[in-house]
Image (cartoon, rainbow, N blue to C red; front, side, top):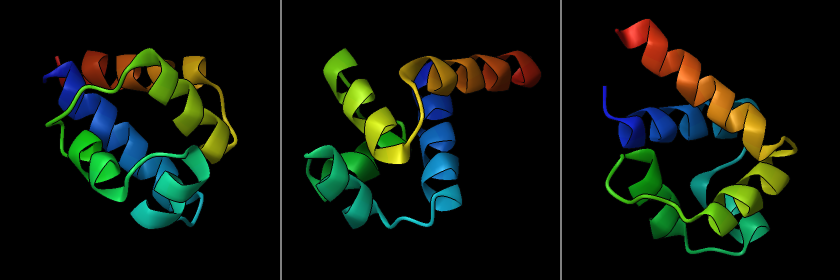
Length: 77
């Protein structure tokens, strides 16, 4: 599985667990809603700064997000 797709899947899962819409997450992270959509679909690769903003908006850490991505990639193989 592509790491971008995996990151997007993890982001979507965390967002839904937090009970947020893409628009709410985008507003909390200070980014555009369509950018959240593109990340979740694995179309765009978020910059490190954006990963930190998303993590803060989700009440987690960037390292936790990346650990979840790593676990998903490992399970896919």
